[in-house]
Length: 373
Image (cartoon, rainbow, N blue to C red; front, side, top):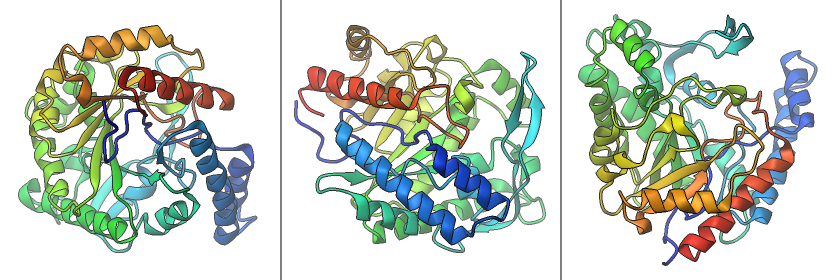
């Protein structure tokens, strides 16, 4: 089988990596006012140049900046949209008695708009580090992140007395402006990171959505239409993917459940080019939802865990790819880790060296299954 002309590649990845210690220390110093933003950016530049070399040395074709300029995969982007506000992280008690830091709450306090380029300068630096043949990928949070966590109560009733269509249209237009900005800088591969559609596979999360006044059966279809509004602005030649995540904070997870409750809306109704789907353990259910995958689109199977260092069996990966191919054509499938290695600056419970082992396993398995990378 031939390599897809555009990403996603047969062996791909979600994008974030464990931050090097010197970068974490620099971020702490900046937070204390000991170094300037410009000094911090120079440290980030060094770390990004190193992670680009790492990805290329491993053999990946899609290359990210590791999200090294972010604290959280979503907050850092969303708070830079006009009309969006965020609080501070708060300590919360988990069911197992441990305390963890919950990300800041995002609120819509005014009309949402694109007031400045958000990722362009970061992408331009990334692009400048790439070798010929590498494709730079930018991951940004899904627009659904502005709705699901707070629901109607998290969006200003003064500025949006009705959400449909004004709120969805404004957010889509802001995202469209960002996509155009990235395309003008040469970016042709963008990934939307979405926890909310995966959360709607979980009975507890569905009940919580109902408690906020949303219909969990209707919401996936509404979100498909929402993302389609963004996709309508996608510049020609850009590949738009979506990644579903059930939680990835410090090797924990927030939701469980197979994709069946959202599969039709996600795969048959959403106008994106590719889907990165978590399938690293039993929490993700079986592959039957892939029957909704339309021709011409790619499902990237996240069969390799980024939460723990134990290396999966190549034979098991091949067996599971065969299982998936009973429900969607093999030529429409690809392979990746289930998530990034560090969706937040805190990172996962995995050794730095394990990142290379996991990615090499993805590459080797993909080459043996599809005959390419």
